[in-house]
Amino acid sequence: MILPTETSSGPPGLLDLDLIRKYSIPGPRYTSYPPATQFTAEIHGLALDDAIANDNRAGGPISLYFHLPFCETRCWFCGCNTVITRRRGAAGEYLDDLAREMRLTAAKLDRARPVTQIHLGGGTPTFFPPDELRRLGALIREHFTIAPDCEFSVEVDPRRLTEDHVIALQEIGANRASLGVQDTDTRVQLAVHRFQPHAQNERAFAWLRAHGFSSISIDLIYGLPLQTTESFARTIDDVLALAPDRLSVFSYAHVPWIKPAQRIFEDRDQLPTPELKLAMFAVAHEKLTAAGYVDIGLDHFARPDDALALAQRAGTLHRNFQGYSTRADASLYGFGISSISSTPDSYRQNHKTLAEWRTALDAGQLPVERGLRLAPEDQCRRTIIMRLMCDRRLDFAKLSKLIGTDFVSMYAGELASLSELVADGLLAPVPGGLEVTPRGVPLLRVIAMKFDSYFVTAARRHAQTI
Image (tube, rainbow, N blue to C red; front, side):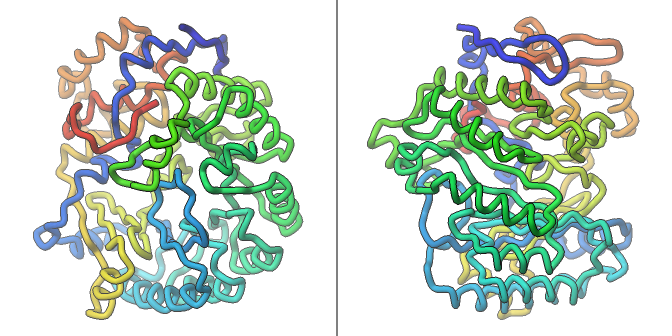
């Protein structure tokens, strides 16, 4: 079965179900390389403080991520690290601890380094009352130097949003928002335990536009229980009427061995078939590109004049733990439970529970649970996978320059392993390299796996690529 769709860069492409079946295996999303599954709890020998010191000496901009984990109710599809509670006092207590973590981190950094990107993720950041959000903004400015053109984004749950929240976020500098919509069909919402009338999305949009947010993104998920091609098409139409600047159209990641709440979908036998799931992606892709959005890659779409689309055309697109980004040169410092930080040669992840995170802070320590120091070979492969995921091509000369050695000779074995992908039409030879074809775009992660020295096919550690 072959499903027609269009690409953002030319003639109609093809989504080939036979190829999807052949290559759809569990695999990383490559928001980092090596993937987070390779992080180790044996952190004492990693000298992560030295990695921070090295990064600090190198200078350069900083990106800050704050994980605000609280949600009033659990969405059964969710794969995030959340704390379910209705007790609003939890927000203030959490901020007390975030302040301690910021002090510990800021003491290790050069205050002159500009913060060019801030992201509030969750959980539900708008679980925090407006005055607590103002307090968080004051803490950030107390400990860090915010660049005048800082990109400050926040994840928003329209069900838990008031206009006072929007005003508080605008006051602390937030200028981008990402709305969790997932699906506008009531039957699907009830099946995933997230009832969200579309009027709430429209109201959130109106407030954000009225208070000067320069970019608004919408998050959707395909592959949820009870979704059909027709119902998801209506969802796309609903959100297009809002005229978002960006959209993220995620494939539902079914990982019940990690998130037990997802088992309810198996018990009820409501999940779409792989064929139906792919058909939903095809419909979304066709409608969004027909509406003028650029397919940035994997699951992101943006208006042609959006910074992501401009970065893609310029070859400067980057990928991090929040997805595609324009800030490739910024080291990432994460705060809060489960947050991940990265410097040029290290990753570290915080404890995932409030108790363990707070115990480390009580001891005056950065609350790190696990991490990784990258060997030079890891850094080379990270560069290759990053450029493949962002550029959708392997430019041999460019990669040779970036990794400091001849790419073709160094990775001859990996290039040879691509022959089957070329024969199946996922990759095509072009002057000076290889290019991912429209047929290969949905399997971009599968192509990247060929350069992943840690990947084990049989390991049950990741969601399906499609």
